[in-house]
Image (cartoon, rainbow over all chains, first blue to last red; front, side, top):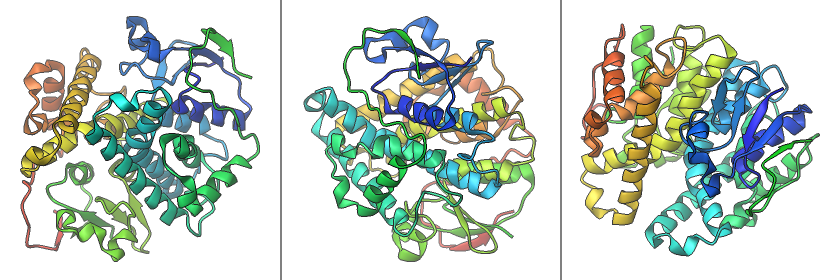
Length: 213
Length: 213
């Protein structure tokens, strides 16, 4: 059985949980309370030198970090990753875009807002993140106008990746309703078979290791 | 023949030029002077809604954006992308890491320093980028200690991706010499057959369309 090092409130962790739910795949989940410093312990840094989650671990102990790389690995052979090289590259294109445009802006803002850290951040840093987030939502809205999903070939790991934080834009202080094509796509993702509708708020969780159903 | 929308001083463009050099592959290069606003013209935004380069265009007009997605697409079937799903996922892992940790920090710093924009950036924004860059170089130095390249299977598109900006760390005000394993890896990349040793400074370039040898 695979092990997933995860932290409930992380939407990077959610990406992988969402794919696992679509695939009806069970993994052993090991909770890493990254905000309590558990990610910086030497035994965890040996699994992922960034100290972040999620990390996928094989039975033999080999590990794979980065949520988007885990999506790519787990989706092999499934309907959620195209076998067509061109479409596969387009799916990766949106996942790379997500790392650059979403994780560094909307995801940071949401985290700061949800944990009460926003007021302690320099105003210039916050306003830069807001500007990038607005740009990202505009780019996405233009792209999704007239499209069902991010790429040809239907709903894929590219949609799961971008959905994770973009669907929570309101929690980052950005109105999804200003971006109707994005809002419609969010609803479309929610109706996919096996969609996982479980978002965990930021809070300490006493369980350190549990099974994911 | 493929067309590459590119801008000489961009190291994101360099990544693709480096792979093309290794593959001995010729493409038509169309220069997009992104810093003169050419990336924001409607005809270019139709190719890439972010307005950035590089973009790869097929003969039939279909386009692929994001430097790392272009590397993945062009490296298919070559020695620079593993066929082993696990190693391929590890290669992608470092390319995702590059988008998140390098492009948003070291790459921004270098651009601001090289174009004289650093002084006009808020100090808090600059110091945040410096801190992330130092963290990234430390992560990379730990990882590369005892390793020849980023993943099993030898030199790959993952190395090309991370090399593009990390090898120019000095131009971002960060001392590569403080990170000996990274510095040794940079030299190792430079000795690869077909390595492209051409870095173009930021400056206006009168040519708007040229062949890449």
